[in-house]
Image 1 (cartoon, rainbow, N blue to C red):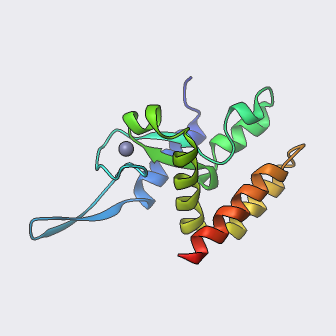
Image 2 (tube, rainbow, N blue to C red):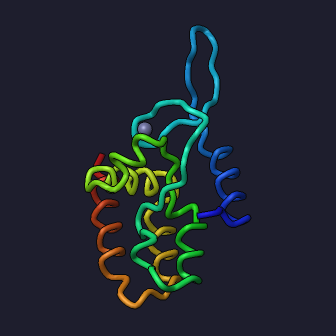
Amino acid sequence: MTMSLERIALKRRLLDERRVMRRSGSRVEFVNACEICGNAVDALDLHEVIISRGDVRGNDELLRKVTESEYNVALVDKRCHTDLADTDWGHRLLTDRLIDRYGSRAILSWITMLNLKAPGDFLNFVVARAMEVEKT
Ligand SMILES: [Zn+2]
């Protein structure tokens, strides 16, 4: 699938915003890292976290919204994208990172504004994860 201009712009923005601080010897640098394993690599994929492409199959407008929102995407390296991102564990971890970064309130209101036919499962999942994240 070719990337839309919006998605290219989103990826570029997130690569900039989600840099993490790493110490290398006595130097401190800001690098992009996989949001699952933490490996610093340049080649990162965008992965849809809370609402997948499959969840909105057949609706181009919703597909665009879920693939082009920072509230729903993670930056992951190729290996984690293939092996871990879609497991229950990976899904929870990446959702928790989004909640950490943006807050559950912003994410819940984004989901609500999508006008999905059945948003309940997505909303409940984010609420349940937010309760875990806020406990720690
Ligand atoms: Zn990784």
